Length: 231
Image (cartoon, rainbow, N blue to C red; front, top):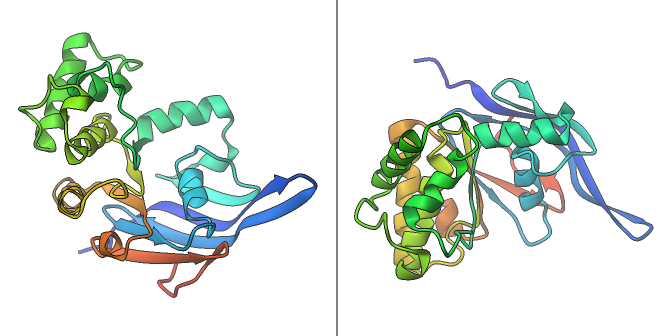
């Protein structure tokens, strides 16, 4: 069987920030690929650049130089308007603290990314219900975030991330606010999304146990890719 093709291709990526008159390098000459259906963990100490790299891949931040292609599209050359449109169609976000809207039900939170699409209200509702069933929350659709456990809230956040059927899922410390049992359940769900429906997951984590769920672990150290996993 043919090897899956790269869905993310990163070449010679540089990123720095200004601190007053000082230029602080964050990422230096990063080059590697992420293949379709891969579960990748990015690890490194605080300040290593892993969240910055995740934000660049997701089109939230802009590189100083270098290339990022996602699904064959060069995103580093896009303007902010085009990037916003591209993100909405191609990237699902999973955050450490869920980022759910307290006054909306689980179903309404999941439906939210579909509001700006051309789907009808009924179609949006059907898509949201399907996503919640996929994460095992068919009996919690009408519950508000305050009525859900941390693990259940993160499942709602994952349903919201997959409801638009994005090309990639980016997860920033998705188990960082969860107890061990809930964290293991969320990691198992993410593995299921990769194994059963072929999603590509890129996860930033500092937790070796969380990283152990991934297919590939890449380490960043002071802005440099510090492994030999190849392109």
